[in-house]
Length: 378
Ligand SMILES: Cc1ncc(COP(=O)(O)O)c(C=O)c1O
Image 1 (cartoon, rainbow, N blue to C red):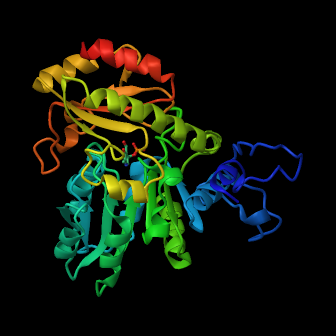
Image 2: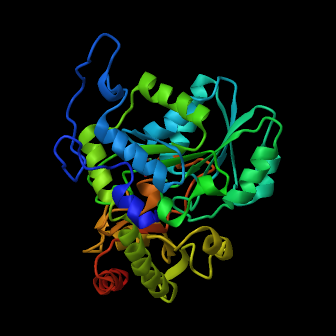
Image 3: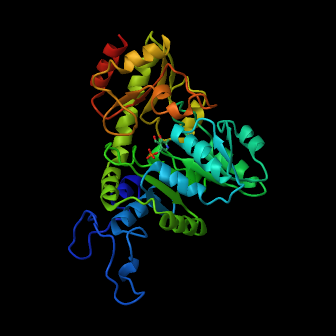
């Protein structure tokens, strides 16, 4: 089946008991067993598995071209679970422009458990090759990155990582692109991670995370950790993400259509210094982005003239673009990463320009969005 069909049907059958077309929200923590050690359909306890979560997990696996999906209470809970695959002393090579919260988890929490991190420019496959050490067990990258929209060649990095003697795992945070635009497992990654809080749920009403893998042995280790650590997604949130995913292809097309009109407007505006958007010709990896991604997505960053003060004034002047953290919902959002989403990386090597503004372009009428930006920049 094609992506649009999978988004609606994968993992979801009409309920065998009553024909309900939509997967019910199974509000239950436990399941009656037919005898000691004889659970019905394998369900024993909802931390281990819940039917609503299972439908979502199976749908995620299908969309990413993987075999196994896992849903978590947040994107960071999913990330944390991947890192728990490692033993103390392991080295992790991560991109130097990853989401601020991912950096904080690696740098401020997991270092205390004797994991070692290096942050490198993954957009240059050679610098990935140079930064691998005999102890490297995991390479972690985002593409496009948050907030600078840098694009990494997943296939080229996968080849380098997998030809290293210890064959480290390659994990890709696919939050910005979603599986509709880019499928890292098909390009050689071992693990895909999502903040489902963003485009997958798509309506800014859920916090959730996901992992998808192809390999059975890796999946078994992750399912063990999901149950043993316990940061699972609840049934109501699983239902909401399942519902959101049904319109993912339509939403991603509209996000990109609106974003590309806004990019053209910003690039020509005298108060804008520089625009960051993978599908814009000024983007340094424009050709790679066009090969690797189906469209440019809904995220845009840009530098405004006049520094941090001007950026703050701009984001406080929009009326339709809501001044808010997060991204990927149907409504348009605006923020200053240096003072908001990326405050946790201030002063580190991931520091972002204080005059950078980030837009999460929603699916409203683009004329209204342009009018709002025009008046706010004015
Ligand atoms: C690219 C990316 N990865 C991971 C996360 C973390 O996800 P969550 O907020 O669901 O924990 C975020 C959150 O903004 C993100 O933008």
